Length: 154
Image 1 (cartoon, helix red, strand yellow):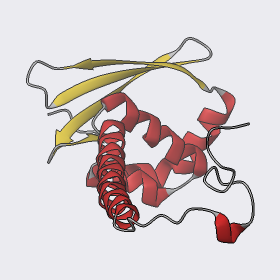
Image 2 (spheres, helix red, strand yellow):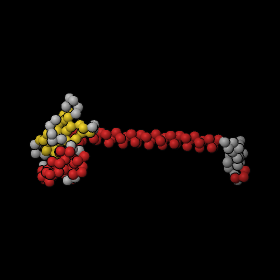
Image 3 (tube, rainbow, N blue to C red):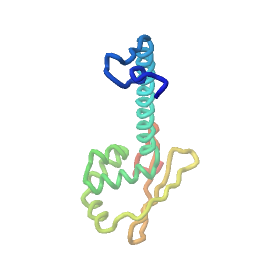
Image 4 (cartoon, rainbow, N blue to C red):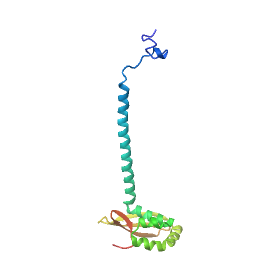
């Protein structure tokens, strides 16, 4: 025979089972979980926002990324996207020659990129190597903290 009666062990009819008299214990646990749940959710939301900001900054704060976006805009024929990654003068010039540039990229795709940032940190040259081993030097300038493709040598 078991030393604890069946009714006290939770076995048997429900009217014979013990009742939890201390009902204050359960709401405190719920309150504790809500408080921690909210703080965990807010911490998660803040970390996601910071992570998204860092990812978006890292894409636009590299000269190579800017040149890649420049060539992607040319391939798609997207003059609006082209205007976002170039200076105003370069955007006007490239919009006139975008169809020629598209044809050139279609026949000779890009193989690799190499960047060299100047000592002042405001200019860079990205060397683009194409499949036929020809290269093109793209001048990139930093204006208001953002790298932009430029046709003007500063």
